[in-house]
Length: 328
Image 1 (cartoon, rainbow, N blue to C red):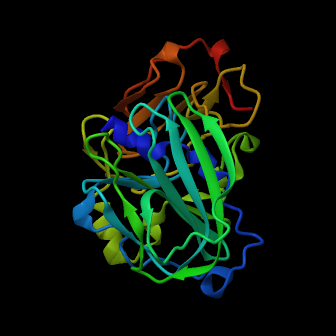
Image 2: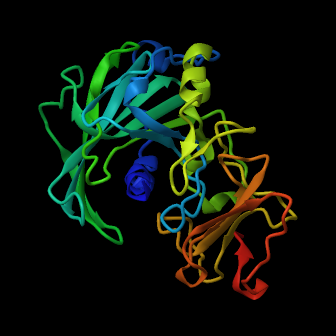
């Protein structure tokens, strides 16, 4: 299950840096209008029977995601599961990702579909195995290609801008769930609300989309939200269901004047760029926020892991205070 979660979270900063770029897009209908109240989504994106688990926003998974993860998503149990639009949306950009070298998906490619819900709310689905005919790749094809590397992979990423492609609730978007055997069954679902500001002690350390990331499950109608919440669980170790509030997780973990929040090694002087091995996060455990604490340790010397303990128990620090500082 750990490999599935790594697939779910990989390359999040690449997507986040694009996700607030709706300004200048040719938005039509509701996508260009002021946002009303919830619900904004009235259709379930993936059939419940195809879902193994659903992630909360702000999940912790050191070392790859030492910091709160700025999106949610699904772990699927069905290869090639159909993905449908959750509501009235306008597709604004597509991204094709090719895995040039990889231990488990070399030669594979998948897609991200960015969309606009209304003037202030945008989002994306990532790790789509295929795109439906309702989302055509424009004649100009894939452009703005770039290559980058992670600790384990070499990746080529290209984009295609889409003009006036609108979908209704329940309309097919494509498929997801590449391989159970390879552990590639993750489907990202991110949502940004420009009216929201996630508070951090040192705001400039984080890219703008991280400050706007919200939990999409809260934006569904009550019936569908209740169904989705039955699937909230952490599969990173022993499977654990979600309970307590905030049920959907949170990006807000810094508590000024306390040990809670994000800490960085003194050598880190630049904004977060994707490599999170130099950070530590102490926060309420996202899946049991009222009962447990999570200590997400990025550095190898500290184990590069996540420790979860009862909230009433004092967490003993093994790191000299001179080795860490609040991100400021």
